[in-house]
Image (cartoon, rainbow, N blue to C red):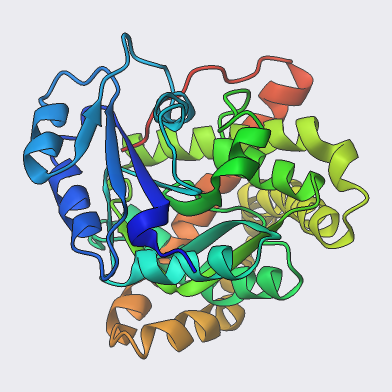
Length: 345
C-alpha cells in the first residue's frame, strides 16, 4: 500500500504570504509521514514569499505572470505532479503533526474515494471575527460535517486542506476557475461523476482567519458569490443526488429566509411594537449551537474560549446573511457575476 512519503505531492498556492509561508512549509515537512514533494507556487508575490518558502525547504515554482486565483496557481503546479495523490494547503495554514497521514487513509483504502477533507480550527482566536469563525467551525465540523459524511456527501472539501486522487482531479480539468469557490465546484463535480468524498475529523489544520471586517468582508463576499455561482452551475446535475440537493436547498432557503428575518423582520418588530423581547430571536437557537461547540471545546480544554466567542458567532452570522443576500441579488437579478478573486487574508 503506497504511503504519503512516496505517493503524495502537496501544493501550496501563495501570493504575498511572507508572514506565514515558512510556518506552513515547516508544518508540512515535520509531518509523521512527509510527502514525496512539497511545491509552493509563488504566484507573482512582491514580498519575498518564494525565497522564504525555498529557505524553509520547499520546491518553488513561479508562473510567468500572476494566475489571478488560487485555482490557477494550483493548476500551474498540477501540470508537474507525477504522484497518484495531490493535496492542496493554503499558505497561511499549519497542520497537526499527523494530519497528512490521517487525511490519506480513506484515499489509499478505497479507490472510489476521490477526495478527503479535514477538521478546520482557526490558529488565532482574538478579534470578534476570529472568535465568530472559531465557533462557526466548531459547530460545522462537529455536527454538520459528520452528518454529511454519514450520508456520503460532505458539502465541500475545504480548499485550505484537502487531498485528491490525481487521476480524478485531472479528469475534471484540475481546479475549476469558473467560480469564486473552486473547492465547492470541485466537490460537486466529483459527486456528479459518481466519485466519493470523505471527511476525516482526526486530520486537523489551523488556518489564519480574517481578523477584521475588511478582510472578513472580502472572504464572505467571495464565499457567498461562489456558493450562488455553484448553485447556478450545478443545480441540474445535483438534483438526482437526494442528500446533496436537499442540503443545497436548505442552505438556499436559510440564506434567504433566515437572513431577512435577522436583518429586517426582527429589528422592525422590536421597533414597531416597541418590544425588545423580539431581539431574543437572535439567540433562540443558542442551545443547538452551544451543545456541539462545547462537545468539541471540552477535550480541547477551550470551554472558556468557546463561551467567550459565542457573541462573535452571532455577529458573524448576521453579517454573513447580508453578504448572501447581496450575492443572490447581484448574481441572479442584476446578472453581474463576481469575476475577480480577492483573497480575504
